[in-house]
Image (cartoon, rainbow, N blue to C red; front, side, top):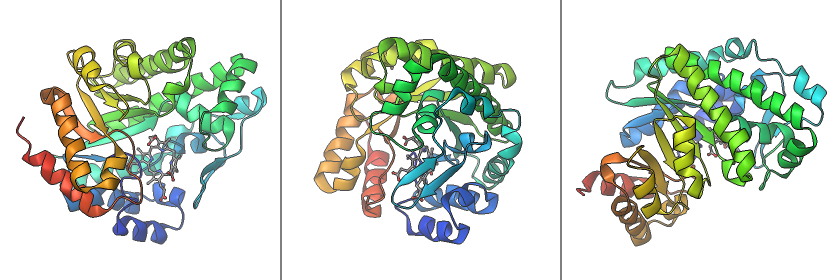
Length: 323
Ligand code: CP3
């Protein structure tokens, strides 16, 4: 289960207190490794995802990032082309050495049969936080900036492509089996912008990573892509694609799954609701897709109020399914 995977777990909250702050936890290899392993120990999932955040990239590029309790991420907003000029990409992997060290430790500690996923944020999604300085419901500041400061915006995307490529290569070399590119806000763009800010930069990351790590396995997650999903798979070159809870299952089954395995789709709110509602949603997901090319997962991050028993219920039902 992606993002905040540990946030509903008491053992995660305890480790976070021990680390001090969220970012200190991301940069503490011993504790970040521990937090990565916690859900695996508890539920025996088939895959673990590295504990870090998509916003360590701006932090490593020299933009101040902090996480405020109850507010979320806060960054010094990028308002001018000078602010884009000041961002540095050469030392990103050095600055993220603690995260890479976490990858090494997790790989050593994980059972061989458990897949280990690294990740980064996609350039558009990361840029949207860098420009607004915080999460914004419709990415208004970044969308306006992309019109009014087109060349600075493209420069920012280019810097993020370069930084993300070397960061993913470092994760794969340190032992990640596959990497996932999170484009949480990909669905907010016009068709032309989707091509220029999502498809093209993602393709450059995919090609750049595979040039250095031949055969690297890459999963894309363009949330809200809807009817653009088949085009995303084709243009980006990813090996598998994450599907949000809003997707039309018949469409995905017929026009994505023949070319590409999919992951996701369970509504995180069904997991909060639990009981028969959860059972029914799980069955709809399993029956709605070609299960031979489905990685069962949530359609977006788990929310903190999710009861642990509902996760147990989900794991038991999915494991018992024989489609
Ligand atoms: O699941 C995992 O533990 C893997 C690690 C992971 C985190 N963030 C840890 C985290 C991953 C894969 C992410 C991705 C991420 N981070 C995305 C893309 C995917 C998605 O879900 O949309 C985005 C947009 C972010 C940025 C981010 N990080 C936001 C907006 C927030 C606060 C939002 C909220 O709901 O509170 C975070 C915080 C964050 N990242 C937490 C964790 C465990 C929660 C911190 C805490 O409360 O301890």
